[in-house]
Image (tube, rainbow, N blue to C red; front, side, top):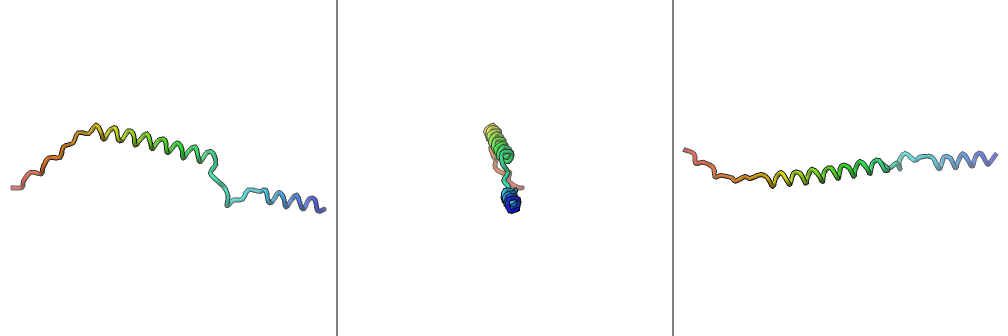
Length: 63
């Protein structure tokens, strides 16, 4: 009778601990994809800013 009790106790120890759940591979892939997308957006933004030709003109005097 002690063998089933020990197996039940062992199964309870091997059960998933809800406080230690990690994002896993899917979480890493999503995070990496967001990082790559951000890098491409920043690169594109810098390219667009370099194309802007802006010269600030002095403010016209008030009459």
